[in-house]
Amino acid sequence: MAKWSEMAQPFGAARWTVADSLVITRRYLTHIPRIPELVFFTIVQPIIFILLFSIVFGNAIRVPGGDYINFLLPGIYVQTMAFATTSTCVGLAEDLHKGLVDRFRALPMARSAVLVGRLLSDTVKNALILAIMIVVGYIVGFRITNGFFPALAGILLLLLFAFTFATIGAWIGLSMKSVEAANMAGMVWIFPLTFVSSAFVPVDSMPSWIRPFAHNQPVTVTVDALRALFHGGPILSPLIQSLVWCVLVTAICLTGAITTYTRVSSH
Image (cartoon, rainbow, N blue to C red; front, top):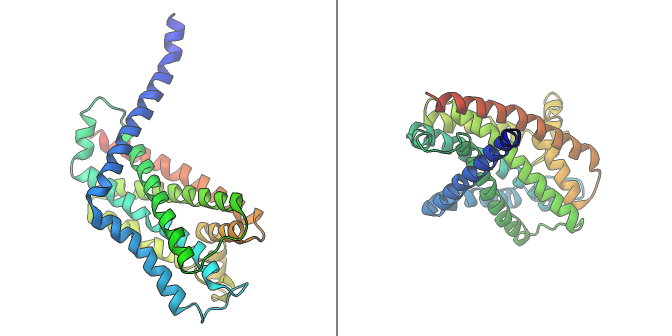
């Protein structure tokens, strides 16, 4: 009996952690409709990007295949998921510096539930934003031409990418000494990563000295994988590179976030 009790303890702890994480996830999701302005501007920003780039640059930029909307939208989707990192970063920084983490720590709950719940709720929120973005894309002329299952694989890749970048935001948010610093630190590095990529223009149109970076970074390979999944083309190399980036970055940043959260929540 004692042996079975010892074996059951890890499973009991895991169930406890999962249950607490789902409770915190629901808490964060319930909190979102209470701030409609945040939801509105989170959705409006990528829509503005779609309209600006399609109207202003649609006839000026030459892309493979000639259809700039189909070229652009995968890049906008990836950029939107990357920019969502800021929400995770600022949200966790606010929870930490406004005392919410201390209040949760006083409850009989798994310590990691706050971090896991935040990441899960942001993934759900990103899925909803992505659904709206796909509808808007179809309104402006974007079309998926490679079939249902490749399109589904592309959407799952986008959500994995969003979760990966959320772990980066979590680590940054927990490491900053103020919410303002977290806001700046969570945003400043995203701009060069998204704009120096294949999201908006072909990499070969960039200056030669910057192409190695543009070719070999997670945004470019994910955008290229999405274009292949949505419209056909060489898929294996960019998809494998994107998955490798996601796994490596998630492993490093999630470990860093857990370590940092454990340290700050124990003070």
